[in-house]
Length: 88
Image 1 (spheres, rainbow, N blue to C red):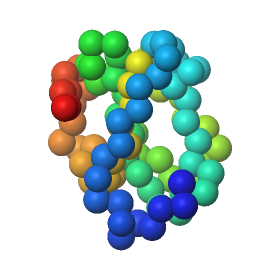
Image 2: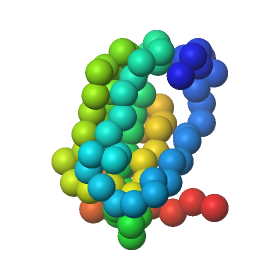
Image 3: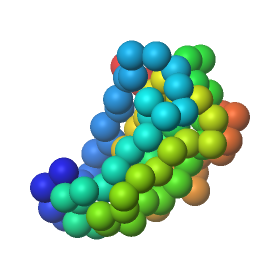
């Protein structure tokens, strides 16, 4: 939130307390540009992905997620459903 689009050249990984659909819901209040978001289950497999618009009220993933990653929207096309992601 409150970031500028030209500064958004990174990804943010969020770990949730438990795997859930509703608990993984996100909003776009005070986000002024589109972002990509990838939802992952507890095994870090991609269960949903979307490009969210600024000020979007709510997005709930199609399946339960334990993690989500916010990244540049153009990166979404490189990631496939069912793919396992890793990070350090």
